Image (cartoon, rainbow, N blue to C red):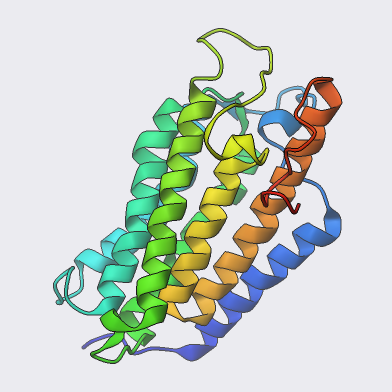
Length: 254
């Protein structure tokens, strides 16, 4: 018997996502990893950054991919399977490529657990809606919302990957001093990698035209935008020669 859509958990999950984003903006502090990792608590367990990122991001890929594989429809059939496929492509890269290239600091297990739960819940929300609730018309592939949304998703993912490549090669293995990112959109903003991912999820929300995707785009804007703001302030503080024309997140504006 096929699973039927239940709107209540979809609405509740979307509301929680949006509320979490708003709460982050209200608190005004970035998540405590990377540059913002505080002094280690004695005895607090930590994992190497690569293992931590892999474990944290894995459910965002595995949960939707598992649901997608279980669908009786072809991957390149209905729009909902294509859209969920795009979601899986992003998190395949985050899980199996980015996680093994990062050189970050050891990750607190408590923070990892919270990230793991979030990724699992969001992956389930997006997959559940697209596979069991979404109903797109036959002409959705030619709708401007789908076309523009997919274009923005691909553009944003390209910016995100290219910016991560620049950051990865900013320091040689073993170096611990901070350097100013140069090239690509880093010419204009301090958070080029964050801007790319925000564009991705705005495009995804436009292509899906759904409440869960919109809520996730809003959360991403709050979470990553806040991080870009604090990165920009950090760079201005430690580099006297930091480009004064460079903005935090939006070229020439903010």
